[in-house]
Length: 86
Image (cartoon, rainbow, N blue to C red; front, side, top):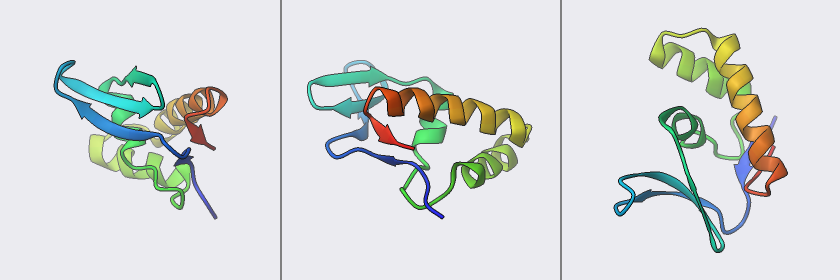
């Protein structure tokens, strides 16, 4: 089973000027909040989103279903914008 991954030319980056994590794409920068960074820092193209949600739920002592719903919404939105493949 495969998981979400970044499209070619897209990567996570710490922007010292903005003092925050961003998603870099050709000629675009997307500022990320902590939750988005936590999800995106774990996508590798192989790990299913459900497994990422379980990992985050254990790490943050949170509801896996709620995290999965948030992660699916984030990945769906970023996929529509061409940053990731779902």
